[in-house]
Length: 308
Image (cartoon, rainbow, N blue to C red; front, top):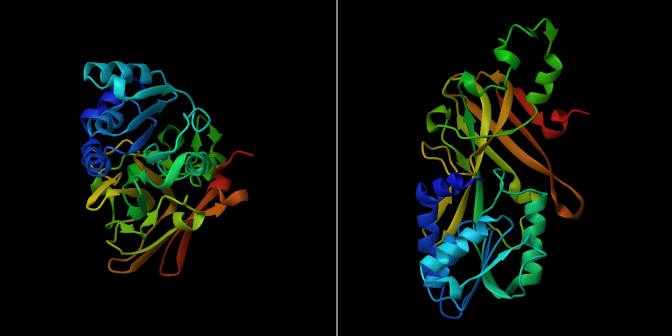
């Protein structure tokens, strides 16, 4: 990210205010805090201002040097240890009572994130310590609107498979099996999102917690995809989300193609499913999905989207 991205994330986000409120609730004079991926040092400074016994702010990017300058400007530099290093190997010796981490992928969990959280939990978290945020849930919703259909090279129409005198159908096969990160406006949802259950983020999530199944009443609009997003619970009554919105949070949503679009009669039931296959060690692997109504099922799978 460049500095403008950091500024946008800081000054134009309800997420930051929610983290501030949660930190002011949970940080006390005996709290040892690790801020993983500190960026501009915002949460580290809030924790230090709240009287934390120790605050370590770690980031692998050179923005951490600017974070140190900002802390100095606010009279907090002596209370925060800034470290430029990769996690988990570069994390200073703990243990820590509170670990702040919000650098989740749009799908909530992938192999690298799960490995990081497992390492942090086993090596650096104090007995009885906590992760902020502490809980999560996934939500699934149907998406309508032609602009969200799988991309067609050069804007080729559905019935015209040729462009530049060439046949591109093999490319489309891959596109309809590949999810992508988007920032959806709320009006493209064909029905309200259906959330799954809440799960604690520690112990580290298994693949069973990354599966969602939902039923929606059809509005009659063709379903061209399904949107997946997550909610993060920071404290009682404090939740941040990357749900579709005009002022979307930086994570965005994950769009899963439904191809060809599913036409369900108004009032009928549409069922959507998303799941993750387990790799060795319980790591999240390939994502698969389906969308069905009236005996008609559309399916997608990430493996089919790979050029092999």
